Length: 366
Image 1 (cartoon, rainbow, N blue to C red):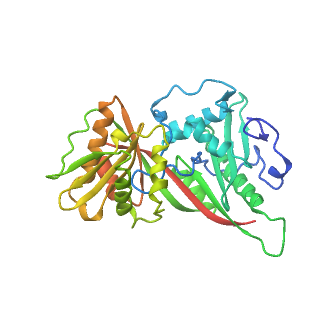
Image 2 (spheres, helix red, strand yellow):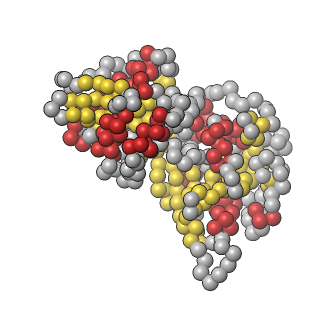
Image 3 (cartoon, rainbow, N blue to C red):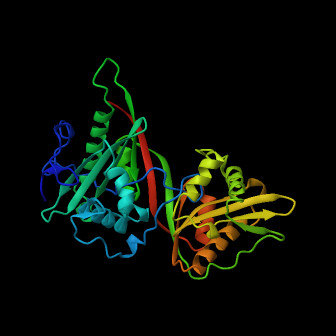
């Protein structure tokens, strides 16, 4: 392989991106590369508060044909998109992580920096990106599964963290600022987790990614007297009220105002109101909801007062049956690892684990 790091699109790295950083081939550490992959802020959790996905991918891990050997794909270097495909196919995780619109959020970010190492054939072996986000810095990376075991993952991470320190520097002074750093991965591996821990990073968030083939979801067994209502302009506010009741006690609940939460759905072309339903029980009121987008169960929530009555399973089956009736062949969801009860329900319904996505954080002195 070549020993020269460049930007992802093949340009020489600027001096500030190389000064004091690790060198490439010849002095690589022996730590396994693990599975650093790209990520996106605001990608939803099906069983926790979150946003709404804006696209649907197939199943890259099931042997997709992949991106052809094009120089660019939707404005991104084709080699980057192909590298992302290889990583998700090998490691599982978020299927949207191979989509150009998804990659662009980190790899073509304003004021961001990228670096990459190519093989003799010009394909990317490893790549990293560093970009500002709010008051902190985000670091992400990719390592070709065929090139792991040579320390490239460690080098990508170390380069990224060094650039994060540089990005957070205020130019000197007696007191050095603390830079909030988030390392993002859409395909967490055991080797990646060990690498992050070795650099003093702690896991702040993780979700299991699950997929189901839509064959026969089974009937939705509703409690006696239950009334099922689809999402509409008139009912959206009721969905938000149940959403808030269902998740307000969950760690990290954002408590979005109704107008903002509803707008995230209504403004998304992939959202499917007909697959999104609210359930109401007599003498109780609205007690549960499910929202869905093209290829995705986005959120499922049941009010604490109505749990233990099979409402969550009925909501899921109802939404999945509506997807299947409209010709969908699969559905994905993400569930927080701190919600084992929900994860168990999804597995009982037939969802299979397809990887894990995570965020690791630390504050680095710049």
